Image 1 (cartoon, protein in one colour):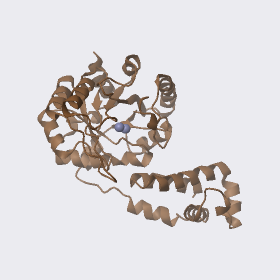
Image 2 (tube, helix red, strand yellow):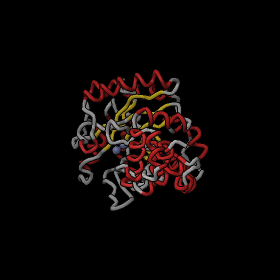
Image 3 (tube, helix red, strand yellow):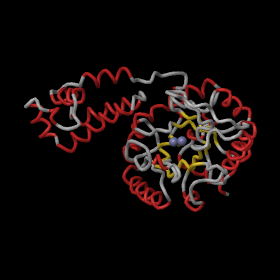
Image 4 (cartoon, protein in one colour):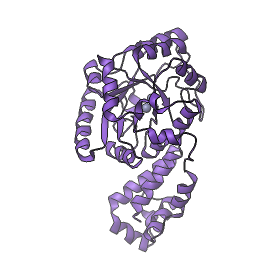
Length: 337
Ligand SMILES: [Zn+2]
Ligand SMILES: [Zn+2]
């Protein structure tokens, strides 16, 4: 096994398990170093027992490299393959009915992998498409894309689509819903994109009616197709309470404007909470079961959202990413009409 491949797979599995970013970065860095140094030099260092002389290679990454070079599957890799498996749950059938993922990030904003790598992972998971939804400019900590960078990204996506066909990368954005409910990208650019996810990322503690107006304004935009992680809650670490808004009014707007509600699959988000999924069902909303993946391994999290959806009795016909790519794009374009 090539050491770089072993390290890359470890990064994937650590991400699948939502491991600490520090740990993920150590293995990702080791992978990049090994790639840069080249197989011959790595083998020479291994033969001399000097792998950890390489800056960035420590005892654990060094052991993986050594075991890979010795021809076996490194112990740590074998262990992670077992430990990080996402068990097949009640959502297995629904997951099989999904054809893509409508919320993914790449290194263009705050993701950990290139567009191509994310797309190839989606292909390996059996998807027919992936909507690329990097952040918008105001989210500076996430290196949100300004208009120029987004236009450049569209060129890269077009080129990749030539290579990866019949798989399709659909163009998109996770656009910030600004405090006044307006969207953090130009109308002309938003109109060019296949699918637009709109999310609140700032001022999450806004007063209830102000937050309701803010979200309704975004939902009503002809550019917005999916409302992302609607409460903004976080369940892991220090956690974060859900935003407070009148969900009856926001979901009534989603119904009126045919905006899908995202079931965000991230284990630390699990957004919306169960009671809001039930309320969304009363309003007969469409859903998008999306991973919000910031790394390849996280694209497997769709299983979690599917388990949750099935527990609420959601059928594939209610899920926008069960549609074929053409149908999804056609549905999204009806909002602009
Ligand atoms: Zn977000
Ligand atoms: Zn996101």
